[in-house]
Image 1 (cartoon, one colour):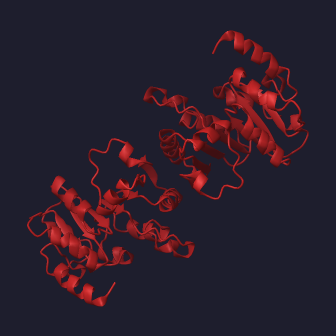
Image 2 (cartoon, rainbow over the protein chains, first blue to last red):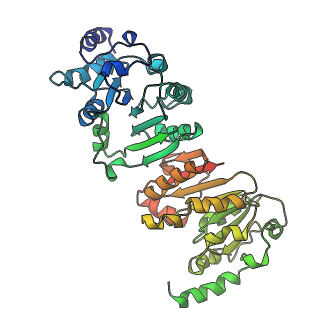
Length: 209
Length: 209
């Protein structure tokens, strides 16, 4: 990624009315930015934003925060929002490693959609379902730990199932071929649509503890 | 299945030197039929026998028992054994529902290969990974509960993962596409070879508790 691109994108993101700077909200206080007590659900790795935007539009009684590390990608989500007014949607920009520095005991559900698989074993600790992340997530849930994951990456999915179970999650729902199930409520990410169209099976698991 | 067929098959099975009648061995005493203290591993639903026969040939220090309900199928396994002498292999014929009437605290590993998926919800209790079966298996393991399952049936696999996890098993190993992994030690069943050749992914999971 070239710095020039990032610099332009950064301005677009931080000037958006949807953008929240984590420095401006003390952790544990995110319901104040929505001015209500509705549950707060977050997507870590929001990318170009289709999932979180559609979720917010379809579920006005739930608050959504899309989190993405890279301005160059997040810019695309922001641009989609130009002509909409979605009061239950916010966008944030930070590294998932800082998730428990930003939130505290206030999140209802985490969505992990098509996360980076980090295929090399020595990078396993970077996978968003590694126990190091699960331990951080634990600190931000308001009640139950509740994670919904989708991916087309078989090895990431196998790894994640093992990791969830090792960390005492139960499986609420699972599909090894989402598009051959009844998925009337499924909201695809941009990446998901592309890979489903290539014929790849899409894996989904919902876990709780 | 026609009675005539079953009657003929039954004779072939019970006259085989590999056949053990569960009535002749008190439960908890199966190591005596092998005359050694090697671990005893069983396959429930042995079918035509390729898996358990090859397992026994490749692992002379482990004892194997293939269990099958239907003589008409088991006959095929017996016929494969005609010219071999495999001291660490036995064949039994009974319904999996009786598993804890036959064995007690003596089994090292259970293999479930391409079990009947019983797709209808009202038949879920017949699936060999239903909690009713897991509770029976618990009584026959000598130490850890250790189950290795393969199937090409996605819904059975999804159901089984959920059931294992609900019953506090951990995932030791998992593959959602066994033939695209390193499977040098894999022994296919007759059914597995057929369905793999059709292009179906073969699912595998090894669980312990």
